[in-house]
Amino acid sequence: MQIPESLERLIEEFSKFPGVGRKTAQRLAFSMLHYTSKEAEQLAEAIVDVKHRIRHCSLCFSFTESDPCPICEDPSRNRSIICVVEQPNNIFPIEKSGVFRGLYHVLMGAISPLEGIGPDQLKFSELLRRLEKDETKELILATHPTVKGEATSLFLQQALAEKGLKITRLARGIPAGGDLEYVDDVTLIEAFSGRQLFGKLE
Amino acid sequence: MIIQSLELHHFRNYSHLNLDFSPSLNFIHGNNGYGKTNLVEALHFLCNLESFRTRKILPLIQNQQDAALLKSSIERKKVLYSIQINLSRKGKTVLLNQKHSRKTSEHILSFFSLAFTPEDVNLFRSIPNERRRFFDRSLSFVDPSYFVDMQELNQILAQKNALLKRKNGSQIQIWNELLSKVSQKIAYQRQSFVEAINIYLTDFFNKMTGRSENLNLVYLSSFGEENFGSEVQINRALQNILEREINYGYSLLGPHRDDYRLFLNKKGDRDFFSQGELRITNLSLKMSINRLLSERYSFCPVLIFDDLFSELDPKVNGKVLQFFTELKNQVFITSTDLPPNLTLHGKTIHVSNGQHSNR
Ligand SMILES: [Zn+2]
Image (cartoon, rainbow over all chains, first blue to last red):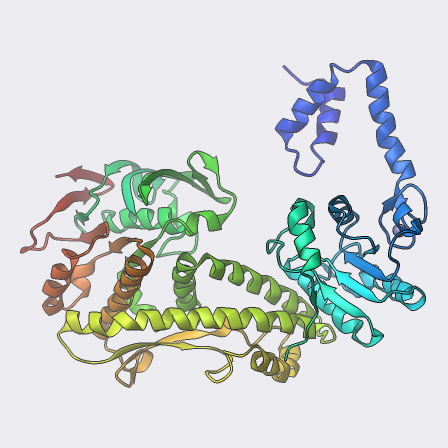
């Protein structure tokens, strides 16, 4: 049987999702056929809503509906300490673990000359500006434990060495090559409490 | 580790082939050009995901066919694995226990065969790439963290080269620091591996030749003997060469420039070894690695000897055969004739033009 055009279109759209292959996309699309019109409209609305309402915080570049984001606005958070991450979704596991009560800064990527990404392509000058006026005393570098993440942390450490900040790197409890997203709470808490001063080569 | 069976479809000159093997000695004989080497090449490919004759896939596929299929049951530490490899113009796909294995590492960190072939005589005469490749493969098997370090090294080098290609020296320092760190780890592992091999090397050589000389494997770090142990000195060496690297547009110093050499007393391999010496030292090297694997890691790799007897000095043959009877490994030997004075405890497989018969 030939798949009707409208259904095929939906399958195509689903298979664009990360980690979704043709088979899963088909299963998702077929399950949609059991939705009532109302349910389908609600789903479509939710998708459009996310697109319209979610944007990046103009201070930390996290995802938010209001600008500045609730974390940047929260008076109970420790404003003297900023945790630097690569992507907005890296913030969620740290927040969930509750181990950290400071502010964040999302770089929106990591240094990678192969892909033409240097400090200028990242939210680095924005970080500099924040450090200039905020009362930041400590910077925690929580980039991924990948080659690109390590290079990014090294760069930040060297570029900010003269700023009189305490710069620390998350302890190596996180598996090499891993992603903060998949790290459990206990490991994260250990990584934060065991964070080390970024040392130079002796 | 024991290869229990082999099934081939359109691999080299084999249209279809089905064989069971002995867990000890397997003697494959037949006239030249009939496919003895192709058979052991398939076995080597199943263990290492590469041939010992070519880096290309296409020559492995039978003429006028689109794809080749290799299937095997392999026993490793009392667990039975089924392996299936499909070769096509697009490359290779590997199924381990009917599941697609995306990571090459999973496979090559589990299975391992050591091959001794006529081409081996060139290992210490050819470009350093081939030597590094051989030692990298063996070392990765011994220490999976070495494999991880090598992947990291390659990523760092690719990033650094991307900057050098653009003649951009400004951000090089961070990559050099990462490179220093991983280089020091890799150099240490390479040096330790060479030291471990040297424990057995001379003994093997003297036993098989009846000579009494000192055979020594030497690791040559591109950073120099006095520097490779220290991250700081490695970083300094990288600093010193940076200007030249920017001129060339690629990285000139690092573990990707290391080398290995053999010395017989004070005599260096490339220029002073005879053909026979190149062969027997190579055999000694592989047997030393085998011994290291079995003694330290309780692992017996599959051993492949392609056209062994025509390649060695007849005086040596007897000693080598004697030595085979002492091995715990599964062994595959190809030869045009059955050796006259060999009492076989194993299986004899006769090959004639893509066909075979068992005895
Ligand atoms: Zn914010």
